[in-house]
Image 1 (cartoon, rainbow, N blue to C red):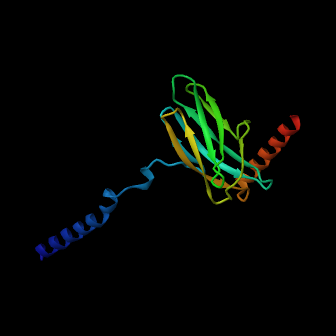
Image 2: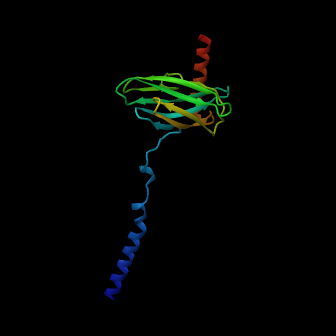
Length: 169
């Protein structure tokens, strides 16, 4: 009787450990680095692109928002390139990022980068980020519109800001 109880206890313990050990050896997704937002990110050698989102307004205008963070010890010039998938036309935008600082575009009072709209909401737009001739990366940026309320207000602000700038010029 004692042997039987010990055998049952050992079997139950072995089964419990065997079934629960799956989570001990498996890949835990929450340990993988990820962007906790709708935007995308990419790390180059000295520049990090954060929370890149391409917003498309009802007016047909497209706005790239995001941040560039420099970990360099000297000022750096970053080239952002958008290639129109239909025509292969390239649009280059340059950013001067001071050493060890962050620049925002599209929020915190800074204008967004206005770009031609080819993609529709739900797609991704391909951007190239070039830190130098030899250091570059590609980022697939989600294309969103004002369907979600958190982007509707931002999109309205960006379109109003662009209209004000156009009227001043």
